[in-house]
Length: 283
Length: 296
Picture 1 (tube, one colour):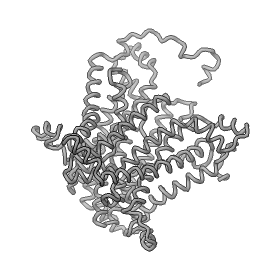
Picture 2 (picture 1 turned 90 degrees about the vertical axis):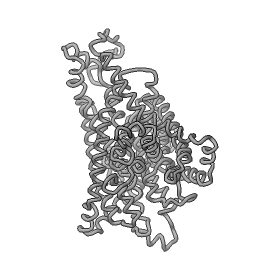
Picture 3 (picture 1 turned 120 degrees about the vertical axis):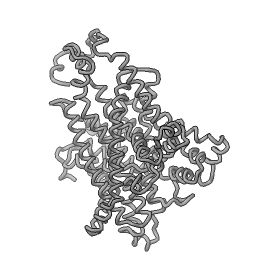
Picture 4 (picture 1 turned 135 degrees about the horizontal axis):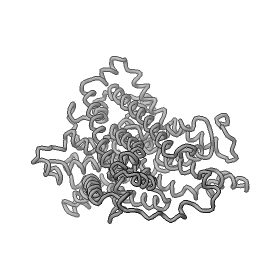
């Protein structure tokens, strides 16, 4: 452990805490994840491609990507509005509303799933008003997207909110004094500061949606080729003891998720650097 | 603070704000009304309505059905299992989070940013994949499966598998919370304690722990909510054996799929109650720590 140290410290416990953390990380997280890649490496190239390239798997990826993208985009728009309203305006109940934004983090996904399905089914509180317009929601890609909007809702709000809070009012006043109207001020002064946070929130919501299972499985109807998302296809393959196919599909999903995680980290560093300005160490 | 502010004995906070011309930087009333309306409609439809629906559906067949559903032996067994799983994964991951944050925040070493990224990995893994990796390791067809079968150890489709999968999913929560907090607090106080002759454990208990207690509690509350509510990962490894390997979320699923809607929502209402309590405690802790809400 001493070899790793780059700066001396008088504090005790470095070897113990780092050793324990790394050992626990390896045993519980890294080795099991590596097992997935070992297992997929044991498939032949033909088997692997047959699993991840089958029409059913491609349809599942397409649906997962499309629905996640649509949900994250909806959250980017509405999340920005919600963050703006919560930071800029005070009205009765705004505090409670702010706390409620985290509900999708706290509510178990299965509960969200059965609730949204009940609301949006043909005879549900919401579904019965959509049915006459010929908009079936439950058991369609639209229903999946709605469940993913619910799941991803807090991300954009919570990434944009702190940036909005820390904005100096002087910036807007300067813009106004130079003759910009509110819309111009937003577009040319506020938005350039907000967009890294907005994109980060979008990416977080998108990444979370790609792997989501519990809230979607009830509302999707689970029809192969039509409303079967990628995580559900993994479960289906497992239940049929197709471990190889399940592993291959999971490996693709995992690589995509890790790529997103790295991208999000880079984005957050970029956003912090931009925001902190030169000379200050990003937190 | 930057060097410009070092030489003066007043701060910008002391300067009275210039009188604002309301029209220049305030949004016009119609914009304000429109944005509040859109936000209320969006949050009302996506958050408030579902929350109300859970409780509405739970009591839709009357209080008798509700009480029967939550005192059913299978429901009670599911609650016991959910509590057991949380009672193991919460303390284990809390200890890990404190240890990792101590090493990362108090020392400089090579590979630190890599370690921080690795700790967040479970956040990026689909719950289903989190369950699958343990099936591949410990399942009958898995890498260690034959050895486990030979020695009569059952992990997958049994309680140990549920505990392991839940611990995997909730692994980053406390560390994710404590690392930035402890980095911000620096090492001066602990170094002072060392110079006064305190032992490592004394430093932690008397100096560090009081400083991080709110943040630690915050992480534990979120960790607990996730541990009790996890569905995807647990569903893959559980085997759904009623009364034995069914957690509360899995019990909700079974009831719902058997068209026992009111009973499913009755059990779900307990989980929703847990979510509401989590949000309230979270908000109180944020308020006491003096900081804004943030996403994980």
